[in-house]
Amino acid sequence: MKKIVLWFSLVLFPYLLQAQSGNSFGMAQKEIDTVGQQDLIGVFKNFFKVSPSQHLDDGGPKKTVYFSFLPISSAVPGGGRALITSTTAGFYMGDRENTNISTVTFTPYFNFTGRFGLPLRSNIWFSNNNWFIQGDTRFLVYPQYTWGLGGATAQDNKINVNYKYIRFYQSALKRITPYFFAGLGYNMDYHVDVDAQHDQFQNLRDFTGYKYGTSNANSFSSGITMNLLYDTRNNSLNPLPGCYSNLVYRYNTPMLGSNASWQSLYVDVRKYIPFTHTRQQNMLALWSYYWTTLDKGVPYLDLPSIGWDFYNRSGRGIQQNRYRGQSLAYFEAEYRRDILPSGLLGFVLFANSTSVTEPETHQFKYIHPAAGGGLRLKFNKGSNTNIALDYGFSKGYSAFMLNLGEAF
Image 1: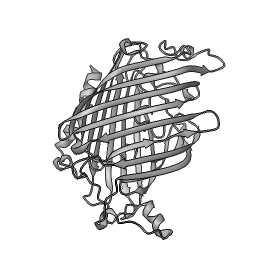
Image 2: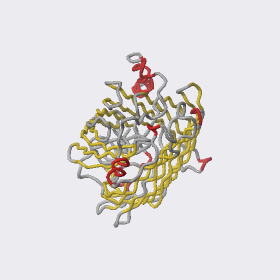
Image 3: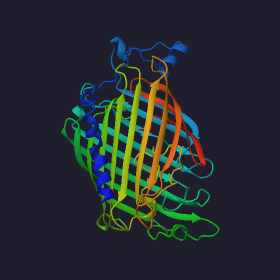
Image 4: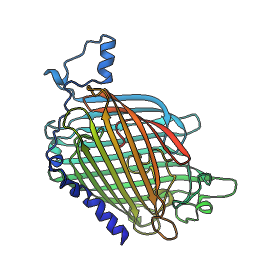
């Protein structure tokens, strides 16, 4: 009953907020306004006396694709550091007045201890937002720690798990009303050669006491998804005022090759509240998601876990995998503000909390908070892409994070 109440609360959350501010749910201006704005590309051109072509704000021809590129050495999800090359392309598939900006992000990384990843994510909006195609494809060699199930696990009681991971998520949604979309998709998670390394335990099952997907073997989950989306934003890289609500129901079946038949539900709600109506950013961003399995048989590595939301952006200040359970509830608030009128430099302050269900009672018992802040440097004003440098901390852990685009 509590799950049902929480689920309805999350789904209805954006509509309750609509009553507070009707204007924030009006038709969003689709084209990004760059008049008077500065970015690193422009600063670079001015410094090196590069003759710029006509810009969007001087009546010249509009660019087709906006690229942002960032080669860095940074912490990666799951712990450790790696060399990362993050490339983001933003482009329009239709009239900029009525079509959201599409994005493709490729973030390969590697280090010298045998860890690497090839993640490719895409959000494609077709002309007039009639169709929305979303994709997430990854091939990862991904050793990382896990702490078992529940919210009471000790920080030092962890085990290193090595595995290779292949993900293939694709969904196609049709516009039903101006902001409401519905569609179907396919999700595949393939964990290969799962190998837990610990002096006292032979495998992941001995450490966690969980019997599905923990026997040092492969786990394969394959299923269809039903997707509902309500989105009044116009840019996922740096959302402007608006609202986002996404529901994904997943059904895995041996008919599609899955090792077991199991179901899950993922509900994601976000709201962006501006404090001013000028170009300068001065905004409160709210994010909450609820992720739950609906029956038994879910492989351990497919269970809801902090940092394993669809974009691996939740839980800043908390180690990825730190909390895992059959259900997970998450909330985050972030204040965003420009420092310079040109939008070149800004800052954020954020706080979040995570709770997972306990393995025996299946109830939420512990809440784990984290907080932090960061700087924002405008890389490309055409796509409104920021370089985001964040510092997050929680009990017993802290980390710096460097990304292209906002966390949510």
